[in-house]
Length: 164
Image (tube, rainbow, N blue to C red; front, side, top):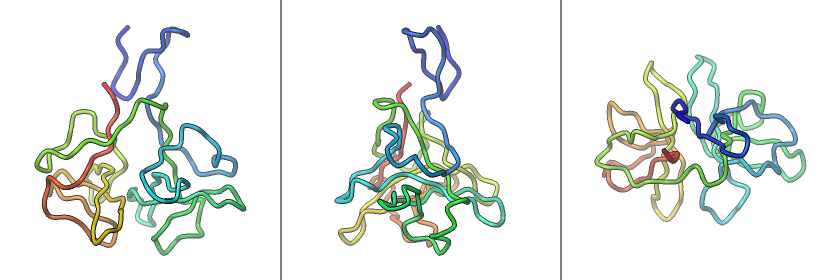
């Protein structure tokens, strides 16, 4: 069978299913096996995005509260406004991090929102021994956080992608 982009074919139930999706952050997602996590000393760190006041959707680092089981932004000032957060869910084994190729968007890069009328993609990079989740804008090819901390060497960050 042929499935549209973002979907994969599940032979056992003979239908197309989403490879990934963004969902509203609600209580109880903390134990969901489909939460997309990233390498960190804290296994509770996950990929989230924030819906800003102007409607922009930007990828940010998130974490799961052990107390409330809700998902919060790690660095953004609206850290307690969980209703404005969305979390990325993906079928296990259907996503991976790929080294960027000179700031180009891979065909299977995961769209993570938009800002300034441009689609952005989730990326990760290391800076001063710290790990960051950021956004990659195709117009610049640079991976940076919402605070514009980022890497200018386009071959030193990874894009979040799904398997085709």
